[in-house]
Image 1 (cartoon, helix red, strand yellow):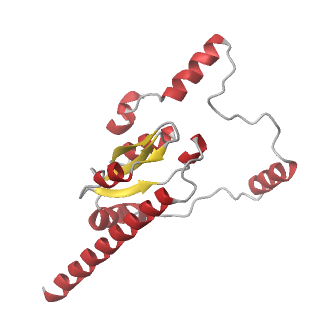
Image 2 (tube, rainbow, N blue to C red):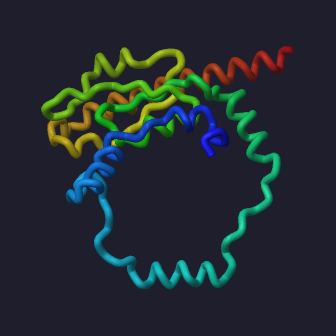
Length: 180
């Protein structure tokens, strides 16, 4: 089974929460690290699921070739492997593995305790020519300082600048194609 997994999948290790969950299970401790519902699913959701199964709403459409062509096009237009994705740290644990599995490189931007605020200078210095995305997560659950939205405004401004640079680059590429 191990040989069938991709190199990226084999390189992943259990997250801290997964390790603690397994340890809690072995010790019989109460797991406070993950949210498991302790109530039944609402009846209308159960009925809708059963109705979908009974109606045979379980088929994928035929897409042979479409996914491969889309992957080629996305790689040509946007790059993929080695692209950097900025994550505010602490971040939701799964973000990093998803970025790695997609061929990206997670770049952690540390938030400053005790109120987990964003240091704008550190954030701006985190951008490189390989940066393609910033994961915006609700890190405010750790503290309430900074309600003025300064951090989010900074992220949005930088995103707008990157979008403008990307559009200019694409326009230049289109002009070059027309002249050749």
